[in-house]
Image 1: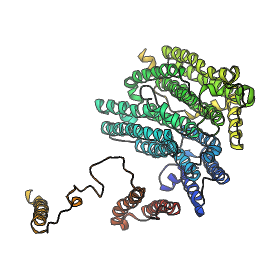
Image 2: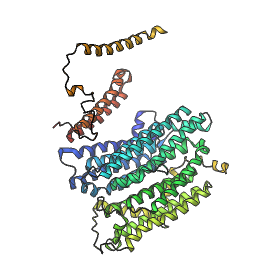
Image 3: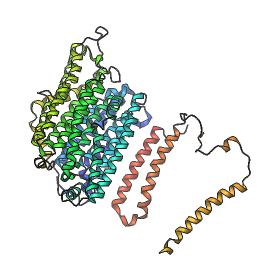
Image 4: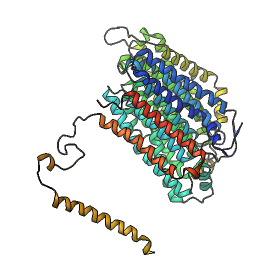
Amino acid sequence: MVIDFSSNLDYVRALLPEIILCVWGMVVLMAGVWRGESSEEGPRAEGLGWLALVGVAFAAVANGWLHGVREVGTDGMIAVDGFRLFSNWIFLTAALLGMLVSFAYVYRQRLQAGEYYALMLFSVAGMMFMAGARNLIVVFLGLEVMSIAVYALSAFNRRDRRSAEAGLKYFILGAFSTGFFLYGIALTYGATGSTHLPTIALAVSNGTAHGALLLFGVALMGVGFAFKVSAVPFHMWAPDVYEGAPSPVTAFMSAGVKAAAFAAFFRVFLVSFQGAYESWYGVMWWLSATTMVGANLIALVQTNVKRMLAYSSIAHGGYLLVAITAANQASAGAALFYLLVYTVMNISAFAVVIAVSNHGEERLEFEDYAGLGRNQPGLALLLTLFLLSLAGFPGTGGFMAKFQLLLGAMDAQLWVLSVILVLSTVVSYAYYLRLAWYTWMRDPADGGSPLPVYLPIGMRLALVVGAAVVIWLGLFPGSVLDLARASAAGLGVAGPMVEILH
Amino acid sequence: MSGAYAPLLMLFGLSVVNAIGMMVASHVLNPRRPTPEKEMPYESGMTPIGDTRVRFSVKFYMVAISFIVFDLETIYLVPWAVEMRRLGWGPFLAMVLFVAVLAVGLWYEWKKGGLEWD
């Protein structure tokens, strides 16, 4: 089937996964309040979770179907290309794992299940809009749909003060960064006369764009994106929000929201601003370097597991910024692969944290993990696997992903940045392995009372899927890596300019 | 050139005269029986001076949310309705979808008990 956006029906076809998610979100929302029963009851809450997963499955089918659709031209406001479809798979994975780890948490904390899963579906739809947008207005629309749903989700536990604080902080800083982003769009429009990415790319590369206006536009949009991917020094909100938000929400948003922001970041900067590469290359270089160094150093002194994982998530954003700095084909493919691996291993690591914290907000300190290896060897083994993968230990998906990023950076001859990437990774081993050390080597302070850990079916499923994917992508990354590389075709044409620079 | 803006000037003048006239007229004509409540500055029914951390009913919030839903609906419906015949079926379907989505929102609010006042 061919799509050329000559009729409005083509938009319906191109947006099928998003439409399914939006409609299904409304279905789940209504199912949650149906017949006035309380959606806070256990079995009912879990039923709503499975219902939401059915919607994710439908969207996945639609996304698979879009692989067989060929797009003609680049006139549409939404792209139907490999980059968007691969990003969609990442978001759907985040939704699947994020929902599976939420089941027990939602009913144990007596959250309102219908609204919870509906908001998750809406935010995934927003992420898809961001990744597929070929127009800055659609990027903005996706950003808002995603962010507003996630603001509500992070404040979702209304009985918890920290959750409310997280929601408010995220909302205020998020709205602030959205303002920057929108101002950037306005200035870019002023400079190039269009919000359509290919048209902007043309105006930027043939020099018809107004120089100073464009520079400010690029800078402000860079600030907006840097806020969303929580790059140092725009990361201040991230640790507090990640620590205060309900753990499954933290897992979902530290993976999904970051992936969506990076997808849009890549498309906007590598497609439309590729002609202005020299002007933003230096900024991205420093942003990437400070994020990697800063986040990893601060993570070293954390004693709260959620906060440690928050800084780890910021650090991973730094590694991905290396790919944006490199801005070549290899890096774009590597970044897609990295985002997929990161999504799986990060949510899985949070899954263990949720299980240990008793599907609530207890036992979140490093000390609470003492004795886990003796009481729950299986769970401790999985935690160790995910931590090693996050650190980038050979044999895990995390290693493969980081290795590909490094290859991309070397291709672009970013030697110093590559060295910083490797050194900060070495530093990151210290805090990941410190948690593993607590699990295996430390005895609990109160003399070895067993940790009761409840692992419902959804949680088990998420852990098994996560472990399988992390090991599989670590040992046999070939097919997925090829798909990621093919998906990034057409992006990262700015790369060759690096040779001119050096 | 200047003639084209004459109605605007008249409207401006009329609204100024109207506003001042109302204030002066009510000042001159109204009977004066002051109570402490009446002397307070008007602040939408809230006590204007005092602790800001007062508890007030969540119903205010519900009304505000419902208001936004219907307000947005009107804002989009009116410009479309003006040009409805010229625009044809495509935008008509789009508006039906738009209203349907808002209707789901209202339905949800109803089911959730947001329209029960006590």
